[in-house]
Image (cartoon, rainbow, N blue to C red; front, side, top):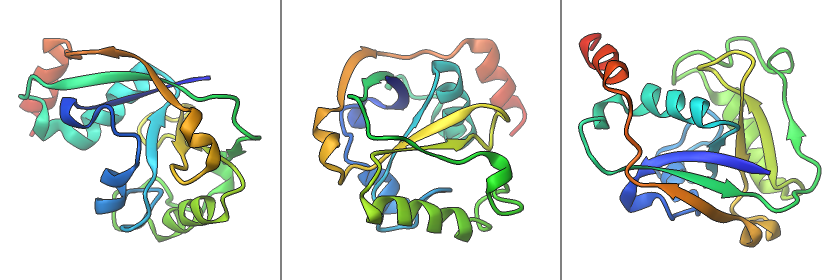
Length: 160
């Protein structure tokens, strides 16, 4: 299975999840490392744009195509299984952070498939960097630099 991640060049090879652990996110509280990836390049792009539009002027954005070796059964959540308002802005994420914390700490599954808050019907795949299968996960390909179409950048920057 392949998953995708967009990052600044200086972090593209880091699959430790430490960045998410330092700041927390929708699916993990601060102090709990997690690797956020997407099921497609398009979704990875939109997720990056939503969360990092302020970094678009940099020329060091990369895309990693990551191969996840045969994971154990994937823990999967559909939107209708999540608490109400799970997809709202940061600050209303206690419930999803608890789900993510439990996923990491129980150590049973390596991959958790969760709905994207950005694109309904699409999914992000969260990797547990503490799981024994994580050592089998490898970056298979990089696009460096990963350049967004100027029209997208114009849309994002003109609306801020």
